[in-house]
Length: 351
View 1 (tube, rainbow, N blue to C red):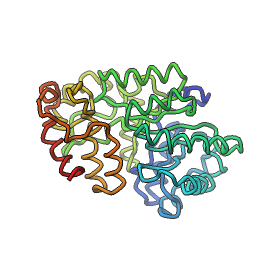
View 2 (cartoon, rainbow, N blue to C red):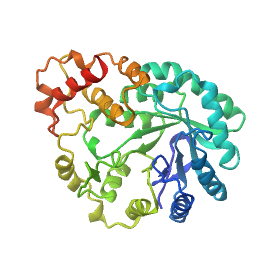
View 3 (cartoon, one colour):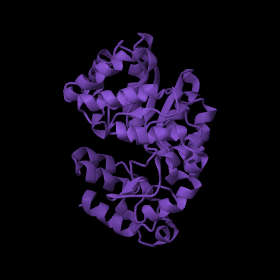
View 4 (spheres, helix red, strand yellow):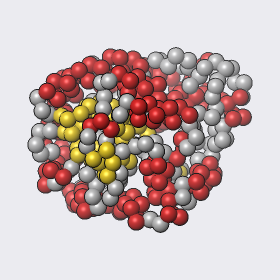
């Protein structure tokens, strides 16, 4: 295992970490995953936000396994989640403290303020959460503060604020020539912010798209992600088989890690799918096309909730502002029917 410094935290973390968001919850599966990870030298584990009272099986099965190896691990515990959490600092703190108590020593090396995606969220919830976590740090409950998000402009605000030490952000092959992501990573280096790369497989779509396996391998995806200035990549394995496929990267030959060869495969496999690569921009009416289309995914995952509709309303330019000029579709390397998707968004969120 290779270890890298997590920015100014001073922590050395495994280049491959473990995400737990999609982990199957049977005790035997979790035990095999944790054992496989630790035996391979994985020490960075990202603990998805989940209320211990609302998901007792998850924590009752996983927490004792982490306790056994607690001194070897760097734990990142999430504080809050999603647009619906705004304002409930006490609820987020209750969940967070229960997680700390269950995982061993009442301490997390990193506290991740989760899913801050708009300037409004950062200016309100994000900064209030960061202030609350300052007290946790003084009390010896956490070592460092981080934030996760999906939008460059908001991530830059947090990085430049001085309030976070760690940024958790999606870094993967679909961004291989994205100037905004490049600028974000340069800024993180300048501010000594440790970068935790989530979604190195682009939510699994790089490996399996629309139910069909692609020809892209985990080793190619990880080779790209780890070629960037990141400290650790945290794929979310479901079980030990998936984790072993990820860990194969450690023994893969150089030819197996050739991510350049995966780019053509990626364009074929993800045809018609918006990957937020940014090639469609600039839009003549300033629609942030990738960010706007992302709301289709949110709707598919959880339905159009009141919270999601309110979040959509924070977009400065909405899908209904599209003039259907077609410029974006001419530029899109993935052949996305942007106009059709924006029309669908209007029907979902604006009618």
